[in-house]
Image (cartoon, rainbow, N blue to C red):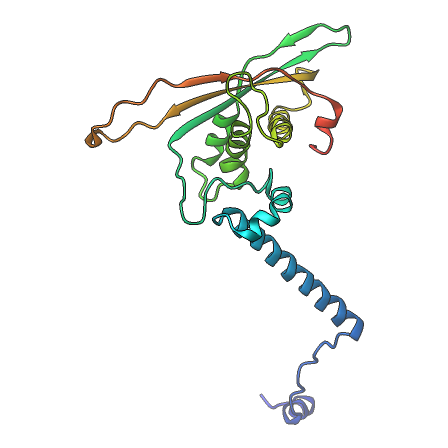
Length: 228
């Protein structure tokens, strides 16, 4: 088939180079500033985490308060740079709530396995989320490390923060209400079972699991703010 005059003209015309998008000076300044801020913030955060897990040094001791304020509780770590501490216990956290009706009638509901829910979400999931794997476990470690097991009294300055953090996680998992009744208090129960050693080790069998019930914590409006 003979080419038309238009096709022949288009074939002889040289290909025009693609048009490059030219950003204004203001746009380049904004993008460059955003990139610098992002890289700087990432570097500072990674540096803070490094100082947190590294052996104590003059820099980490001088800025301990600032480091703790950034790391705790959301980014708390349970390992050190040169001495990782693998878990040797299985910890199961359960929660139950107390609800109240308008006339003040209180009802204590059954225990809910928070850890069991996380395990169910992990099994069969090729890419489980961080919240299912670590959020509840690390929250309990934070609480356990800042409270006395005898009377649940805080032993560090971050004890109250650990209580609020653990309570908010439990309330978020259960919800504002149960059976149409608002939640007014929450209680946690933690069962700790030491992992049995291999048979060839010759070590003694682990002790029986320990059950630890925490006191009832009142649920206030401030505990629900920003959760849903």
